[in-house]
Image 1 (cartoon, helix red, strand yellow):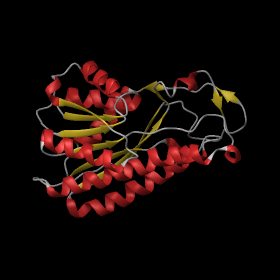
Image 2 (tube, helix red, strand yellow):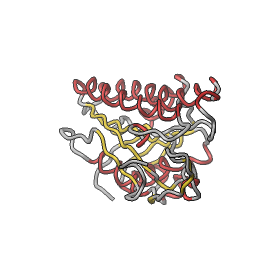
Image 3 (cartoon, helix red, strand yellow):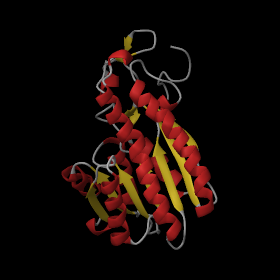
Image 4 (cartoon, rainbow, N blue to C red):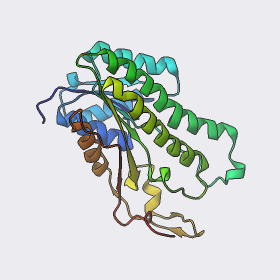
Length: 253
């Protein structure tokens, strides 16, 4: 365990990438606020970390709701006094297999609200807290995707939001300079989570075929995010891609 006593917020911490990152942060010595829709899943993440529960706080949060996000940051300040790292991780996908022309506005809006508006609202609140605290500043890490660079078939909503996250990352990195806030993005490819298990059984490819894809342990993502968070204030990983080595991302398919 590291000798620091930093404070982190991890959204979507009840499962998948968020759970792996939250556990890694807690084991590293962070005081961590775990945000997500299901309080029971957040508490399970804390238990799985095996750390003193006084260093962890589970806050049931809807990142698409401004009041809910404001409450999350207010509870963080009340419990721990400051915020050093925000990991904007919460995200959803539209139902699989729906062609672009058939995707409902409701499904499109749900993905945009969670994957883009949610990180925006959290970034706003993080800016407000980080610029006013002493010592000033902090770090925000956004969960992008290799979809921010190349789409999968029938992924218009998810891919659009992940491209937009890149814009949010760049702009927030620029606007955060004056407050000593560093902003970066981790683009993940084929981390083995419940959401990604389908890849091992076969997923649609750009050439119309269905093929299984290589995956990697989700802990590799947690290690990467932890490294980004551990950098000194004068250094920032603006973009990093962590992916299964043999994933069909680089090259033509």
